[in-house]
Image (cartoon, rainbow, N blue to C red; front, side, top):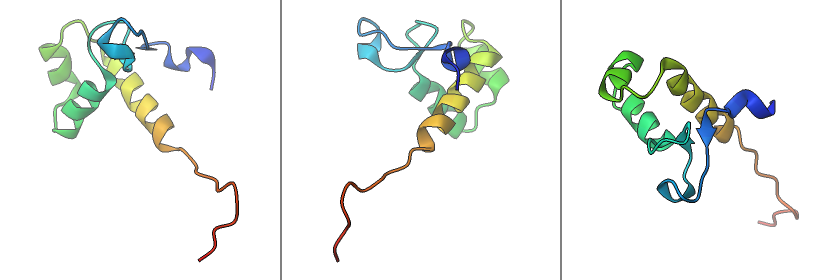
Length: 80
C-alpha cells in the first residue's frame, strides 16, 4: 500500500488522544465504523456529520479492512 492510501486517516496526539481520525477532525474512525455497524448509510452519516465526505467513509472501511488482515506468527513452536 502506498503512503497516500490512508491519507484521510490521521493520527495526532493533540486530537482525540492520538486515535485514528478523519482528516485531522475530531471524528474518529471508530465512530464512523460504529455508525456503519448500526446500519447507517453513507448518506445518513454525511447528513449527520456534514464535515465528512463519502470518500472519508470509504477510507474508514479500507483502514478497518487493512487492520483486520493482521497475521499472527508464533516466535517459537507451541507445545501442547
